[in-house]
Image 1 (cartoon, rainbow, N blue to C red):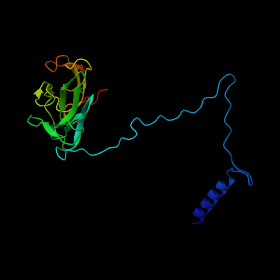
Image 2: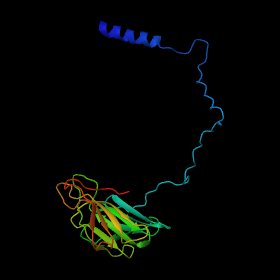
Image 3: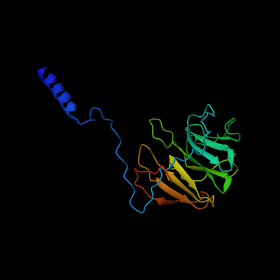
Image 4: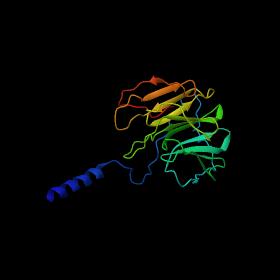
Length: 221
């Protein structure tokens, strides 16, 4: 008890010895150094205005299909976009979320990990199946799907053994040239991991980034 009192007293004494403003004087900020001779003073940069000052978030649904795991918009058509669900396929809206329609509902895979629209042809989209965010009950997929009619029909175009796809990049001018990041089997070794490239819309795939059987790819930039 006496040691505690002595320790507290020592702390108070040390704090009391710290330098502070003199009595009767006012502390002031240090003077700003003048710019070197021949160099004009630069005014502080003003923050740029918000790009969308009136924008705000709102819930647009739909209230089914699980959580959204991938999204894709159409350049030049702000009311048209798609989302892939963790266990409910792909959904499309033409009216900025007022109404939704399930457009990938009859394929073998219901989990979507990646979704991308071709910048040069908005009717062409690629979907990578299998949840890409690891969790205790993660759902696997069966490869990459492609649509050429805006999502009305889908065709599987390869990488059936990838199980979980995390990202897709489509060439800005060639919709048949696509990169895919494959995570692979979450709970075991898998040779179909890494980054894959197709130059013919999914008919053939080339592994352009090989990874060990226990290491996959989940993102592309």
